[in-house]
Image (cartoon, rainbow, N blue to C red; front, side, top):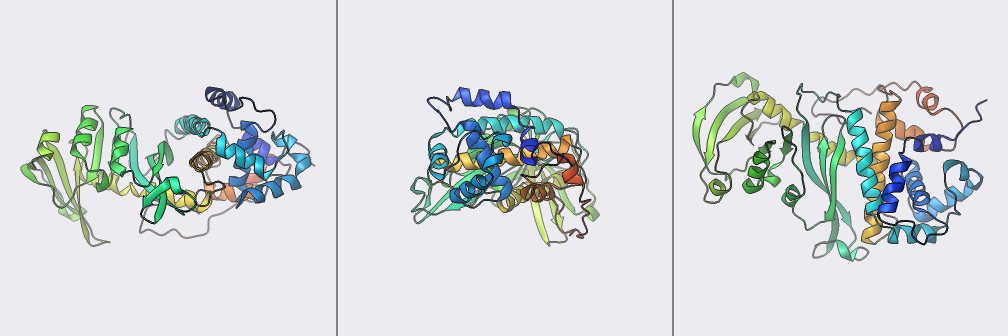
Length: 390
């Protein structure tokens, strides 16, 4: 009989502890702390994410029931609801934001060679934002509308492995396009965006950084056609043009030529018009790449369903951001576990479900995740792309 380490402890072994301590020291997270450290806080919150705890009292009750095992998973302090609430309210959320970014850098290296449906050597990103609704009376700092509160989760998703390479958490009033000012464009990379990000001044800055963009155009975009290129209309393409903008402001902000591709989707019965500064890729690839943008929508849907980022354990801005960043860390950590253990046949959803009921079991992690021989018997739907197989 295996009498080794707990499953939760084995999962946390994939954490780069030296980097976590550096993040804590950077913001003096353990300054004047005698008992409940930042690591204790992170482990408690990670346990809450993996086991789907609903409240601080829920976390306290479950961990106290396993009091004799807490030392073996790295928690050295006594767990109480008030202590965890105080830590979430006062410990700098940037500790966990920086640590999540470091985990993201590890995961991106592991998933760098993954296929996302289109054979390209360039890095492809999908940029979008999702709104998380909040009660304005409980979260007065997150004012969105007159009687509604919200925060926005702005995400730049690397389509190889569906790993978020950039995340920014703002209040609901911040317009999506403003996040383009925070990005550091990578030369040669492709950025796919919806028309909410159509700002020609910012797009021209991407162009000057030698990055490529693909974005839906608006119906009122004024332009003049310079050239039309040959297309195969049986593929759904309607035009592939080289244009210049003619709007008073748009031609000032984007003075160079731009590419316009129009595509008709037979399944939806709709036409889509795309703008891009990439004149090398085939027009059909431009349309297919924009279809891959749907993966970022699926990413938002997935984390809202399977991580605790819709109901919060605290009401302050610091507590909300702490919880979201730790949730992101747990998501990326599970993705790292999946890749390092070579669990290609298991989805992240399946791994999370297994972990949720086995965290305090004593069994080798790889054996626990593979002993069930999970087989996906659900026939996938073909009407949209899938982020993860269920």
